[in-house]
Amino acid sequence: MSELYLLLAAALVGMALIGLFRATDLLRRVLALNMLASAVFLLLVTLARSADGIDPLPHAMVLTGIVVAVSTTAAVLALAVQAHERRRRGEEP
Image (cartoon, rainbow, N blue to C red):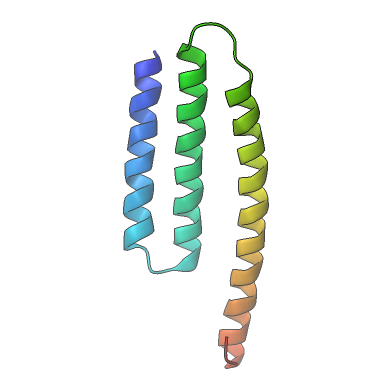
């Protein structure tokens, strides 16, 4: 079962990298970065589960990473909204 999750993480990384390099819109790039972060989180949890014994460190790292990803996404989206409003009014960025 863990092989399925590893393949899913690899597919998510591939799709995220394609989206990151091909997208020209800032919102799509932010979404691609979030998908890449989710793939890394899935990979860490899968590797932690397949290891011998119980190690809470990877799970704590993933939880911390989720909090950081959400706050960073909120900050980037707020900046993107401000930049869009400035462009719409014709001001310099």
